[in-house]
Image 1: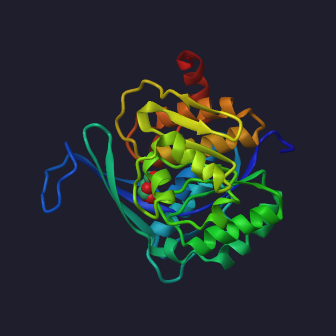
Image 2: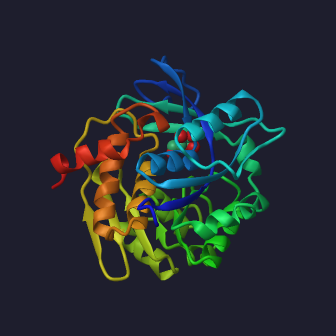
Length: 311
Ligand code: RIB
């Protein structure tokens, strides 16, 4: 980190989010009349890359954008955030990823993703980015891309002695051999239980679930709990950090923002407690605005929010 800015490699998805705000999420077979329709940049990987860049990291993004204007727009968006796109491939055939998102009056959402080009991000695409892995302070991953790409990213990170941060969303079954290489895992409660229960959510409680993930070899587990904050479990201790009180408008990308923020602060050398408090503030700010990348705060916005709201 010679210039004081941590270097991150983010490997993941990029989508266009088509968002409709509704009073409530419809039941199967039901139609509800919604409010505003917006189109915003999203995708779990891209959200994490943009969040980290706005918080001050030098980010190299490894991804596949779609053919056509949506892919080009996404690429321009990454450039305008100062993200290195040397390893973003424009797929010659497949459309850009699209997420259909409903956001209800409480800010909760329901999301369906058509992966498009994300589904063709390959181990070879990731392998080409090895020089960036060699330079990085940490590697940040999620699961909206093929598992082979995630596995190659973990192999490269470990080959070069880098920390691996994995946000296991959307839920995908993971072998223990992969979990054992993850330094920091940031599931929500359901994802944590499903990872252990072969896709079924169990009832072992947050602490029990996180402890079992540690037994399987994960270095540290931070379970995100929405407005309740997060529960942190390390081999030495476990503790709860409360969420910030804010007016929730849209929770989309709150988890992405949290994972990126905790990774940035840890890569800057901050202690875990401080990194977690910072990341809780970042995700709180994210839920106060509509949209995924549209809602991600800058470092200056977080610094301004932190002192007034730290407990
Ligand atoms: O985590 C939020 C993201 O999930 C959205 O931006 C959407 O694209 C889906 O990938």
